Image (cartoon, rainbow, N blue to C red; front, side, top):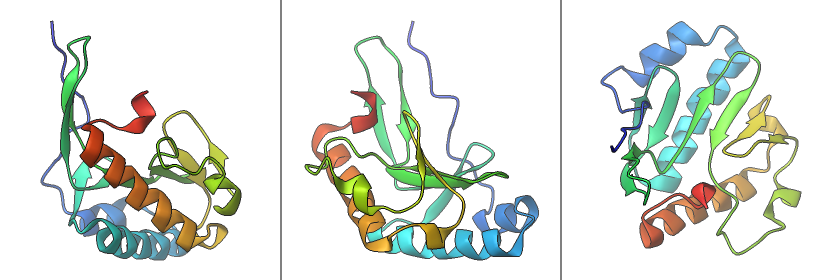
Length: 145
């Protein structure tokens, strides 16, 4: 039986979400700046995905297991402790790209950072654009490989 992704696009206002969810002024400013950058790099308007993820663009995926759903090309969440960044380093053709990203922690499906000043924005732009390019060419996130 096919299962659907639990994180789906919603109609919640991104601005309202940030103003109500983010309680530190620096994190609010970083969130709004990251929205501007990701919108510019992706060409997509920001949309809420689930209760806390701000995503840009959308694509449909379906796996051999039957799991399918829609997901944003790129996105982030301004979590309380740190930001969660939803981009992929796989499939970008440069395995050393993270060496230039700045101060962050890595998990399987996302990158965590405390503040936008901790990141090299040129490198972040390359990561965002390469993630979108890979998904457009392969119709799935390279993080799923």
